[in-house]
Length: 520
Image 1 (tube, rainbow, N blue to C red):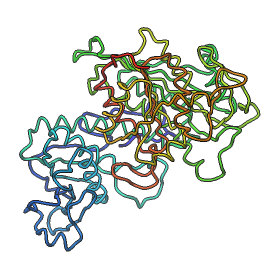
Image 2: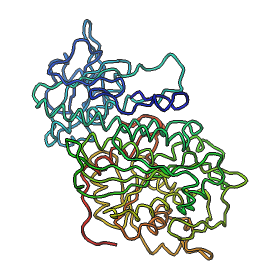
Image 3: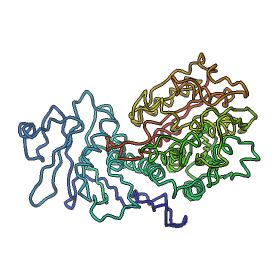
Image 4: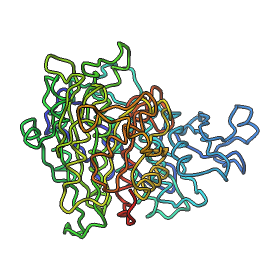
């Protein structure tokens, strides 16, 4: 994907919606035969069955080279006078899935990292629809080849991917093309989230994100309303004002609305209403409770990944024909030390009047989220469900590592929809219990509630804090602290910001059904 860098270009130069057959400069094609000008052709091979004859070697030769056909394996086979071939492992038949196919496509893309034009044979998986298979391959290839390069001036680096051709002789071409188009849109959205999260915090401020959000909204058919520090103060958003107090950069609350329409552009009755609240801490120093003096600071530019995922996901809704009415709240500010910074022992007043004692200035995400959650509950008509997403707690990362986000909520119906979307997109989650026996840990001597609990199960006490502001509406919380970035390339996740949550949210909003039964 080729978005402009954030440090030099004017807002007018930021184009989030490439033409229908491209992602940035990447051209996507479907063909019955591999193009002769492809640099390399991917040949999927499982651990059992016949080896495709076009590979030119047998299984014994592959095995002697260390290739068994397992997912994650690849073998480059040079040829004279034609494109090179890459044997790509797709694993045993019984274990094949959308997730494994996406992983295999990413493996192929990285094995062919020095080629500008890739072609790959689209395999037929039992139980996987052709459009879903095509979508997974496009996502895997494009996301694996992603690199954040607007600030990199070295001349020797991997060439950008220019063209991808999916080769299929037997699968219905219309279904394959439909999957390619959806994969293009979901990959484009994910790469937008990655670009935003990878951008240095001095370049991507809350005000700059407002400018970008306005361009994205105009291009994607979203309504947008932005609240500056004066408006936030008038709204009584004490969490946003308190966290921002130590920063020289003003805060922004960016509200986005997607209204579903039919193919003629006419409004339709929505299938349901869902509100999204995203943590947008543009840089988190920890405030006066300064973080340790190590490389954790370098990762804090990605503390706005929840807000980035919401903006990116909502950019894809119109193009994919989502039927739900979606409102997004991006809670954007720095958390910095300074003479006016929020102090331990301060009491903030959230939107709606609840008072909060601050006993940890590095537990700031929940303080900005509380204002967004209250605003979501005040919508008319009220939403059927509220979902928030945030890089919220180190406790969640320590519990789950970097492959799973935590999910927790007050209503199993919405939590189950999150889990289903996570499973389908391979942006996986693990459910924690909303154990209200721990609520007393948030009791404050001087305010309605304090912003931290005890030393254990911080991901649960953080969720219990957030639940205080949802007014009993079905709600789920995604803690993506561990999944927001990776230190090395891993499956379709490229080093740096992963864009986690973007495809999960897209899938959730495309399939959203209002939770029916009362469950608190």
